Length: 152
Length: 268
Image (cartoon, rainbow over all chains, first blue to last red; front, side, top):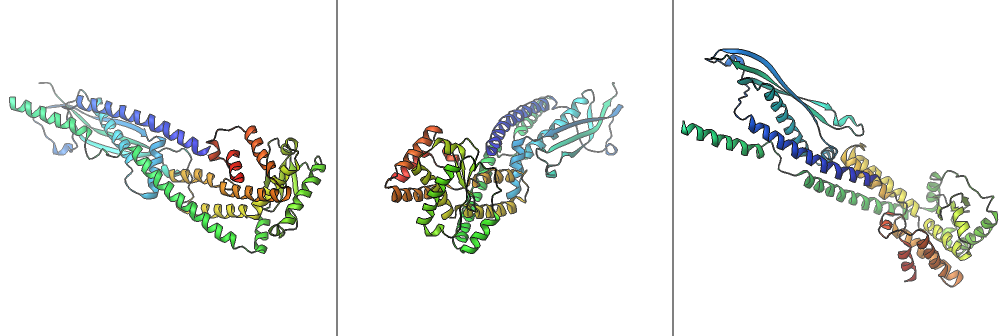
């Protein structure tokens, strides 16, 4: 009976997880294309100069907390034995990073550009805590300085 | 200006193309990887299972009688609540049958006694503990009254004892658990741990089907010699088949083979 429960949970979470992931990627892609011509760069403000007058420079942030599903965690657990890339978590990391950057950029829609973009991550839940049902979650924070030029 | 705009468009097209295919996007699908990893682990576990089965078989077969009895004492079943007083007349009859079986077989005489107990349970069942105690459910005594059937059931249980089936399954489990604990690091919450522990419950099915067939053959041979026919055994399996009407596939996962298969094996 134990085995059956695990198989059912795996099937369900594989199905739901892949649907959610596909939807998320689709959304991310749409938003990235929409923001295509709004620059965001990661050089420092000291090295930047402009002939235009800057009206404001303010901090913009975007955070996202994202978790792997049961299925992805299960595969990662299996990989423990053989080693290798945790590909099931790579897609989660990809989603988290892009989502965080997008949120930051969407916060600065009125600005002309974002400079000095930085990314930070942290684990929300430890996979090695040994507790049953603990899911690995990752938080990504993107922050930068939004520059708005003065109107001519 | 014209040139700039076409540059811009081709850059944008390149960018959109890159969104779906870049170094950060893994090419392997989760489902495929899952199947690959699980099948690899199952192959390893099958190897471990066969290994522990063979090794425990070799060890148990070479056990001396003295060591065997000593080990069996360790695995003594805790005394269950029994209803011996209520079924005294049946117990006298059963003991008589049991003693006849033991007298007919020298390899059962290494032990002084196989105590018989009746336990209060409606299900029709019987079991033998590693220390030789035989348990019979009150449901069995109520439903079946035939002496030859009793002889078949008792001989079947004593057949398990004669073939050292319980010791073999203990040995198998000890080796199995040792190896899988080393493999998983004792962590049952990881993916590997979950697979090994849940497949491990399948290895704990008390006796394998082959062991059941062997015990059936032993009991069948006995009642054929003693009573001249194995009609009682066939009737008993037909009765079980009727009582527990289960679809055939359920039997693959259960401890005992299906009654139909058991009839086939003893009549051939």
